[in-house]
Image 1 (cartoon, helix red, strand yellow):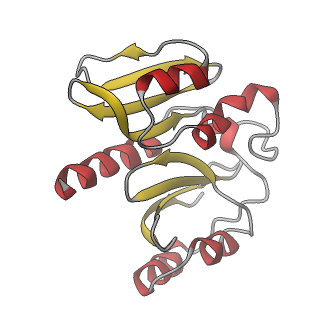
Image 2: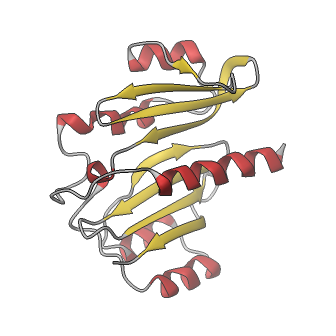
Image 3: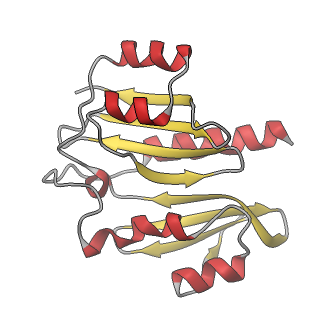
Length: 179
């Protein structure tokens, strides 16, 4: 079971990095009505049923070919939830599909990823991680049974995505690019 959870989390992190988007003006993340879809993840939790998620979003999701993943297209992005095969009573992972420009924040300072890697290897808490990136909260983009994933992106296209364990809020993975 742990292996399946880790595979799902790794796939969600890869999807998070590979999300296609445009580089925009660089305002504060999630500051306009068009970005309201980013807030959905704060209302939906791992363990919620498909019916509950449909109720929160306001319409029924589309089942994907694997019969375990449901998708909702919303504005510039969307939302997805993964369930156990043929069982929609409890989501095992939830994720926002976002447009890169919607998560950009000019206050994000992405620098010296080698130093950040060392800090992660030594053990770094979410608050210290965000301080290293300019003191800006990351945009919550996925939730799993053991981690939450965040993204930090600046208008120059530099981006960091990171996962933090629920039990202690310590970073357990990150990927980044400097520009």
